[in-house]
Length: 328
Image (cartoon, rainbow, N blue to C red):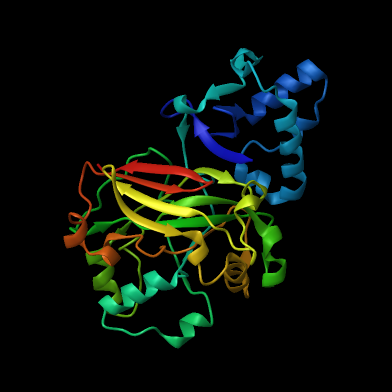
């Protein structure tokens, strides 16, 4: 399934829904409609937002799959609950980050090609310990944007960059999770753009701390949280996802990579992140940048310069959808 957080007009309260065909089904309204139409009130137990549903994901995901099957395939726009439609065409909704208020967003550094390129630019060889442990930094969970939301150009930078990533959203929560048990904590996958101000980042990291102000102004996620069962067809013989990842800037292909190049799997990231602490439902773990997945790596002189106001950055990951933002 593909889950979303959305609203219908600016300023309206975000709502919890799922994608069915070209529609977004409102979970609360669909549950009310089924209670009236089929005399089944059990779906009213489903929480009203994704983050809350993730607290007891095993039960709630089962109910949500049943709700999906209980809604008709056709004429969805003719169904109403308390005078309001249960379904809206996807093109007519505003999408937020699938989880709009996670407790944390940890972003890892797990694609070898990108790490090698980034370190080379700083005159550094690969550190041997990088191959031993997945490393991460904490970004800002209160500066999240969804598909088609506009990104304000940050102050005091002239080197704005995108980063093409994908991420997992955690279910249930836990601590000291072993990698062999980690898959049951993955509620779903989403696309991530870890926006970066390279000049600010460079200032901080020269003092062996950060990134902080170089990255805490914006992160984009979406358009959906895609559950793992939707991606079974994309698993290779080693159990790794094989999904093409691309970035277009103003319609021009800039980056082209694959999830399969991930060196540290998400199971190892979960093990590392949960060591000596609690991971919470709705927490987000990012993959880090795929190879070729940023201007820093490609070099601005080769791709028309750093990002500027008015640019439209379109990330696409096979099976996960499209995440597009305009810089203002």
